[in-house]
Length: 571
Ligand code: ARG
Image (cartoon, rainbow, N blue to C red; front, side, top):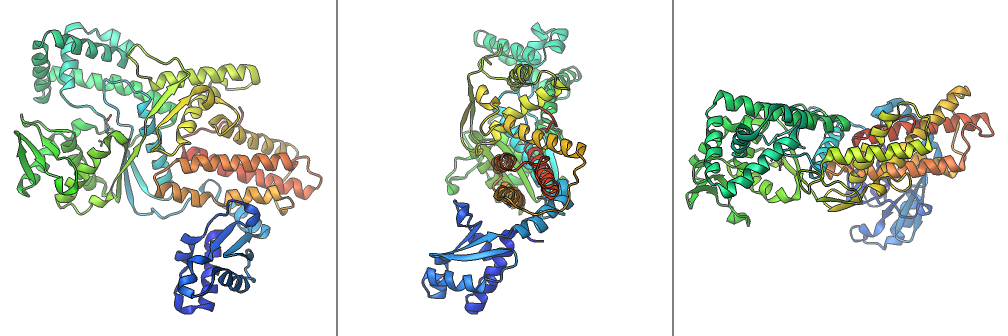
């Protein structure tokens, strides 16, 4: 069964074909013109007829009136002309027989589709730099990236999530040299990345007084590049110490990657691309460096090789994209990074196009704005960056305090506190459209009121506890029909899930889902306030409202998982 929007569009298209067959409006055209009226008293969908007045050579109110007549026999709702608009109201019958049963039949697959079937999508996200702290700047790429992966999988794409670790570069020469001078294995095994950062910072400081150290670091990196066993072993150890630590954060977020092929993996794959660039005459020498001139596209040149012949960030990205195309045959390769890197991506995407790779159109950059935090004492020993693990820890602790007060007997306290504490930050972050710069306070993120993660998880838990009560009372989840406006309103909201999923994917915007979750919570809580469920006055209402609760539970659960949130049954 198609959704209400498509059914309405189909009906309108048929009506237009009757009054003006020559106009040639198809269902697909109509779908894009339909609007959701801000005031639902007006209807559930509105068709603005002024968009037709030119083609049909008639005044909008006249067209609306005529179409209302032709759509009077609509099976799934009613239509009415209001000024230049044709308004549609979905029938309760449709909501119950179609929407509710579809949710029941499809369960966790409700809202999904198979538009991505047979297509591959590669997602490059999180991608921290080894030996560097995992800080709040990484929150965006990590959760937007993972949510986009889940959304694409939900509609049938075959997805590969890649953590493109920043695991190569001259900085590892410094790290090795610093470790050789002052490092202690046990201290690093204990203290992790923090300790690696300390060594690195110290080395950099001393470089300023003693420039010879720079040469030493350079020599260490050269050895590493040439495959020196000891240096290679140290580097591998740095990678594993860092990754072990990042993994803890990934685990808290429920994130796993399909590949951790980082920058180092592409070292031997760059020469072929540099050669291709050279042969196609795209490389220019500029002050000793090799570049691709992009002035025709109003962009600064893309740097391919430094003066000394060493490769650069764009060089590696080009080689990695070619490798991924050959390995995964992607339809889309999505890169999620801060908007500070937008130019970098625009530049090398263009270079890939100039190289004649016909798949350049599948490269997608998804940028996001900056995050800052106040209200939390989160400065760390490593400077003024806020580490994600510290932010999560603080949030979890605060949730524990709140739980001690509100619900001291809760089972699995620690686990629930983690789900709510981490979820609060994720939800708060993903609530905003990604490109916006945001500043958030922990207290606001953790509030149980307002558009927050705890509010959404709490609403989900409420649906669980109602379903449990219904089960205890032996109430079956069958039959019935809408008898209250809040019931229909809830079903209407649930009916839009699939469309929201589509929008979120089209715009690479998980916030569409986050905001939709709030809409569902609001509709459910209004229904809960207006309509007694297990204590309803008729058996039929008890059963029907249990069905509605179960449907809300299904949709909320799926939607929350799509934005990397966990769903405890009790909070
Ligand atoms: N490691 C980079 C950073 O921390 C992000 C990598 C993004 N992905 C890419 N293919 N360039 O800034």
